Length: 294
Length: 295
Image 1 (tube, each protein chain N blue to C red):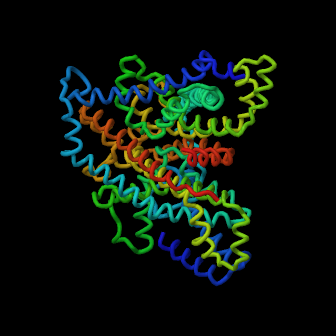
Image 2 (cartoon, rainbow over the protein chains, first blue to last red):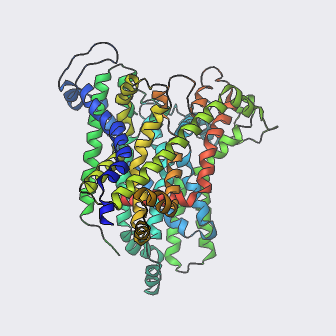
Image 3 (cartoon, rainbow over the protein chains, first blue to last red):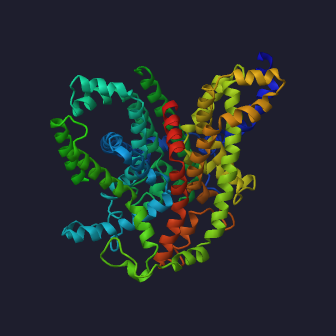
């Protein structure tokens, strides 16, 4: 048995196809980006090496890059302070929904499985200044003065994008907390009830603390998802007006394909990967220290 | 949103007083809140379907939902004719099917090597592939564009299938190997005693047992790649291989005034994933939570 299980040729044939494809499609491109990131290539014709110029420019002189990071941070703050508490609350509600429990869980998740192309187009028409549902609705309830060019206003557009992203991700967060709640032994609920703990006390003192491993997981996922946000922005505003809704993924795309700064775009890609790696690994390390069991 | 939070506060205040779980008033309030938010979540879908049956002239009124005077099936006919829906639908089906089958196959082999085979580098190798979950796909768009250009793969389905498979591997590997850990080895041992090779064990014994995990992986990958847009937008240039999401784009230029057909196209794009999700809700939920907790 041991001999068969440590046969190098078998191991090679099991691992090689997937591993090589992964290297070729995920790691190799990043190395290529590192190479092109040190050039001033426009995408066609000859190019020169500019050393680390692109990287220093990104880190020290590129306002749009930092704005993109700031937007990711804003999105993260909104996700953690608004979406997650609501998702947790509704996960608790769903567990008390009786025979509709499964229905609610499914309905809340539906936006997450619909193509972003569809949801973005849809929200763009909701926010449309003339025909949009939102402005019509405001007028209908007598708040006509609140009407806006929602996606055209540099102050407001980012919040519209944030609302859409939160709406689409709500079911995902809810599902995570719901799964966490399912993992808590039923007798704990009964024991707390026997001890005379009220419903609110039961949740705030017993259940939510027990959920903390799941909360950590959800936070890590939220951080990476906010950093990686691109498609919604690409389809709704393409970073505009005036880069106020820019996110890194969209910014590097625009830099390379619209502004023809291919080398610079690649440098942003490399910085992007490094930021994602550092943040995720740091969070995993920090959170791994204290994982409680029950 | 404000109304909901206000209601929520009421609800928590109410539950303080009443400890009894079966209080009917409390239950009613709870259900009202849940239905309210549930409606908010699927309202867009209802709205899409509703508008996909309207005549273009009916769009600019004051109402939000409108019962169509006559169901405008013509919108769907237009979607199919002008939106290239049949062709794009077939492209999407082909690309996602190949992707999920190959990804599941490769992930199963990798998982077996990582959980059962004995070799020195298996820990680091697995951790390395897991890093793929952190790498944003957007960071590979620019270099892959050049890479595919050099390999003459731009505007070729392979330019999507290859990265799709590669980016499916980490999560698929995680789910399948997590499942494999729970299967006792005794069955495999007896098969090996009977003279079965490792590949025989994987495809004749392990594959049937891991079916639930493989199904989960396939459904999750189906939904993410069916909806994938940005790579398709970058690597495909001609009409020949474009995927379903692009049929909307057809209506933003030339036929931009045909709102009814636009909504019909959006409905056609949205429905397959929603249906698949509703059919396999359990598998999806299991996959997502398993992936999240272990990753």
